[in-house]
Length: 422
Image (cartoon, rainbow, N blue to C red; front, side, top):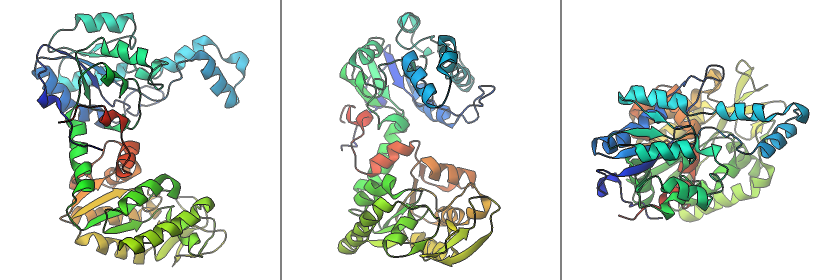
């Protein structure tokens, strides 16, 4: 995939109406609707400010959550969850949509920009169309949740065209959504010249650069629960990495594949053969594949469970692995000391439980002390680094969990492929 794409700096934005796709999928308090973390809104500010100061009229759009835009499908989903169909009214469906409004985002964005942000009551309906038509240079309008539109997730051409008709230029800056071919992420580029904002530009330069021409040695740390979700990443990184470190729940599938006993630990039986293939591929490629040598096990999945350290592959029944052990911590931390580039995706254990966050914390601390380029691949790894207080010590923390994973797999990202080549 070509990572070299045109950015907002490569086009003239003065006097133009610009459709800007942001990632405002922010966490909110379920009772009050109050935004509990505005990082994603802040991440969009450099591009928004550049456009407004450059004389553009900005029509911002984003999804929020997973509303069901069809009443029939909403009823079906609620019924599958055990709700009584007789109690599922259109009024309740409308209420579920309104619970996922971007109005609180407009309010927070207005505070951060220090200027009013107009809010449309719909996405491509009469209110959005009228407000977009009346928008002046230096003003900003936020459309409603793009997933209120039935055609959004289907990448419906009519929805994409309706969005595009409001503007003269499309700017993609929602890295967390570029792995999805939706009307607002890729479809609009069929009708408008499309460039990246600063957020996507940074992701492409840093992650793309690390994959295409890394400062060596390149060490990849892969954790998280499932081998199945990371197998494409492992496969691709075996072509370019010098060392691959495996931790988290996925390590137990590797352990079982080699004849170890894993007790009640996470195990994907169907992926054992593939794990052995990866071990063999690493040998053939001359890549160091590091697996845990010891494990912290617990007698329950509980923050206060009884725990002990055992050798990897020697977990008794009734016990489950929840973190890497002290010998493994030393092995993994030593492996990143002299790295040129480190890519980390997935925690080493159940970092949400303090007792089993030791491995994840140790790896984060080791990365904070290295001179390497350190890239955290979004999702749980980003949450862990932020929660443990090491975020400011990392070179780059990706804003897209699923997108960064697919990026590292070498997959084409629809929301990037559609942008004009530089």
